[in-house]
Structure formats: structure tokens, C-alpha cells
Amino acid sequence: MVGIQTTRFDVQSLRSGLRSMDDAELLRFGQAAMYMCSSYANSLAPLREEFVIQVEESRAEWRRRYPKMPSSESI
Image (cartoon, rainbow, N blue to C red; front, side, top):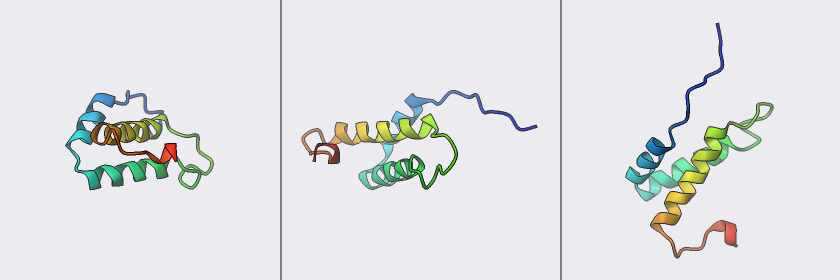
């Protein structure tokens, strides 16, 4: 029987994992998470909250590392 996965997404372990990544790994992770939020990856399926959280947390980690660097959102 197929059921809906009800496990809670662990943000603290995600943050810990992001902190341990080097810059290149963090960028790749963020790009992969952004792709999973795209319409190409989710053609008819609803957007999964876990991917949105991964994008937000990877951006937050990048801003923590480079606070004075302009982000693409401000351009």
C-alpha cells in the first residue's frame, strides 16, 4: 500500500549539513534545490515544501558566509 510520507523535515540537520559543505558544494546544492522548485521538475505535481526550505536555507548559509556580497535578489 502506498501512503503519504508524514515525517517532519529536519531543518536543524539541514543547516548542520550546509555548514559543513564547502562553497562549491553549497552552490551545487542550492542549484539542485532551485531546480526541484522549477516547473520543469514539478510539471503537474504540487511544489514540495522541503525543496523551498532547502533553497531558503542554502541562501541563508551563503549570506552568513558572505554578508557584504550582493545577492542576485538585490540586482
